[in-house]
Image 1: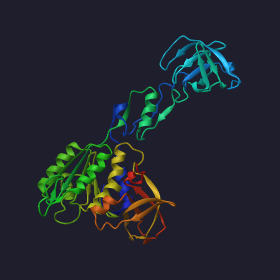
Image 2 (image 1 turned 30 degrees about the horizontal axis):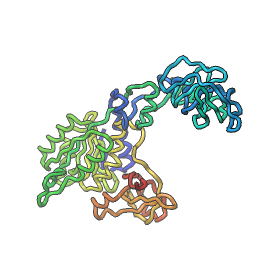
Image 3 (image 1 turned 135 degrees about the vertical axis):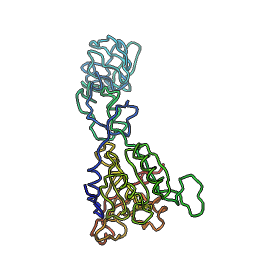
Image 4 (image 1 turned 90 degrees about the vertical axis):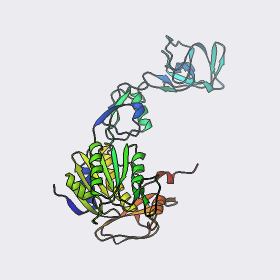
Length: 412
């Protein structure tokens, strides 16, 4: 396949997701699957509850024995036993009798309703009932939460706590999930210093590397990172080692056209299958993508906005697909622009912004990124100006990707 250069964003996106696929599966206990992607449709092995149970603390009764019971017309029943949740006793309800039960207790034989304790008054061996209870009152029927054999979760969906609880209720102890890719990030640049190291004059912290590292680990991925100098031998060695052990290799910097931009040239020498290089998107245009066997390799630009935009729009969709996801976990909402933004004739523009809730819904304020790192840190969303659109006027509705959902959460 001949590599494409200077292609449109949509084509780059489609080529990216077309050329990656979910990784293999692994069997994990339910305690370790939250945040993972289900690798098979899940069916209930058993129903839940496994028998009719009481929904309330109170008294199991025959509904006919408490018909028309009220505060002025109480029904007196003889207590012939008690049942707590988890107990099994050979109790059978007879006419004119009641059995004391707790929430979750098995419904005794002969009973068809439960009167909540607040509508009763216990008097030694008897209980006075002050409310009627039609058949089924305060009873959770067998299989009403979950029917044996029913589908309870779908392949390709992200597992959340309530879903895992439902799967457990269906009789499962472990399930198959997609393996998460191991990602290695290499930041190239003789001027770069690894985060946490001393910064001498003329040096800068490798913030792009740290930013991407944090994005990936926030999704639970295992990530390794390193900083290397702009030297062909050093870059070649780092890439060769990364391609041996990682499922995805990301490089930061060295992706453009200067004599120091050597990463793509080194990958060419190593024999990768380059799919594309340079995309008509701003920021982020210098991005390159290719394959090394089954490994996905992305070369990201060195400018912070370009680096993050290319990562968010092209790398993350590939990583999500490799995780087995059917859909992105980046939430998108519609918002109204508070001021106009300008576009490009042949380029898609990605605009950072601040998202707020108002009386008319979400509104978004564009950011110019003149302060780059500071504005990126303050942005909580990003939106797109399509290619060929000269200007989006104030008041236009745009689709906004939420980068920091917590920014919209109520204060506590």
